[in-house]
Image (cartoon, rainbow, N blue to C red):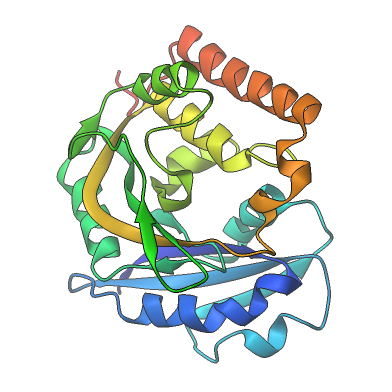
Amino acid sequence: MSRSIIIVTAIHAPSAPFLAEAYKSLREQELPDGWDWHWVIQEDGRTDKVAPHVPDDSRVTFRQGRPGGPGVARTIALAHAEGEYVKILDADDQLTPGVLARDLDALEADPTIGWATSRVLDFLPDGSTAGFPGDPDNGPIERGEVLDFWKANGFRAQVHPATLFIRRDLLLALGGWMALPASEDTGLLLALSAVSRGWFNEEVGLLYRKWEGQMTGQMSHTEPVEREARMAVVEARARQLAYFQWRYPVTG
């Protein structure tokens, strides 16, 4: 029986046409013998706009639910698949060749590593790409490093939460994604960093699409009052986890 990586995608109708490219990037992944993936696509709402774009593949599960935002959609998606690891794949993004195998290797090789991330390139409308400054060194990221960098650099983390690959038991213990209208993935990243060592791979693992319908590109995402509140609760959660000295893995 094969071991499984759950690929979790939250989707809303405008991004549905990008599913074909996301699926292609997933099919091109090569995994070690005995491993496979199960893609759970969870619509944030119930429309007739997404289903026509869902690939016809036995490894793909499509579900719908009442609207609650991408964090709610991703968390509820965990009910529809079993697996030891969870990989994030937003509907409008694309994995690069080999990223799943690299993520898996990092966590299988070291039980003290709870999560992995990788380098990201913005995928621009004209087909070109652009990198991000300030990537950490290839290798482990110690507990608390992400929060310290994020706080010192205007609420910008040095690793991208859209690339997260996480041990499923750790993800569940933290309650999945934060119940926020946005920045729910950043909240998860900081919580993970508060309780567990991570890993950064310097090879590009994701093409992060920039387009006019992108939720993080809307004016509401940067509205100052809400953004300040989101950042405050994201930081408070991470600091409380560190204060309580919760640790992964659990030691006797």
